[in-house]
Length: 315
Image 1 (cartoon, rainbow, N blue to C red):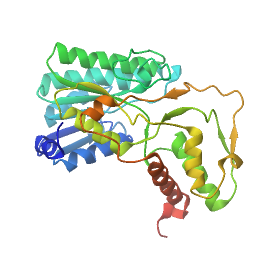
Image 2 (cartoon, rainbow, N blue to C red):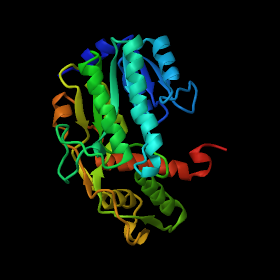
Image 3 (tube, rainbow, N blue to C red):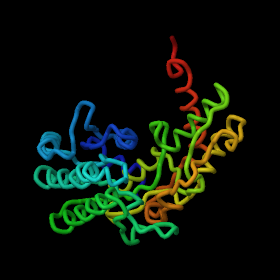
């Protein structure tokens, strides 16, 4: 088990490149690396310094100029619908090709972590382990599977230190309004501050994980700083339904969510349950520090601030 002091020693003064730095996870990974004394260079597609991972020339330029010791490829298109086929392929599959080949050419000593997903596995409802079989159930899952095999190829044939973290659902106040977790938190805050409002949802019985993104970032950094494990599931192993999240948020504002939510008739969820078996990452000394209830409080506080005039700021 690698201690924090050993992690800091391994990262102190080293260069870290993060692709997908503008998403939810990028800033948390950056903070985790900075706490360990690393120099961090973050790149996003739309915000400067811009780098589109689907553009090999752009990725190669970053790797050649920065000569990183650690690379996190977090850039992705998160939609699973068939309409996202090409964007899934460009960001996830194409991004993996471009990042890994650029590292092979210009920074072969670097350790690189690709973010994978729990949805790339066959889901029979039981906790998912990294040894379980993959299932190309969507263009998103197929792109993740392809990226994983690329990581294995570059590890086994090209000698690169490649890691894959199969991430399960994780949340934070950085989530946008279209994500269920923040949509519910904002609706509860609005109902508390401005009166009754109806929120329309699908199947509230769907069970998934509600980890805190800051905890998940710590797991990714811990994974890439050790030698024994190259791929593992990263999650809490604790499932809660959407109804549980509704209860956690609305109870905090003294309301019954059933009086504020309308269930869409005929809605069919992607899956009934998606929960991890995180025994491997926990065996490396990581465990989540933020509870389900603590995450709900955190996101409700953020939703309250956003509901105030000027986002809670002054005039």
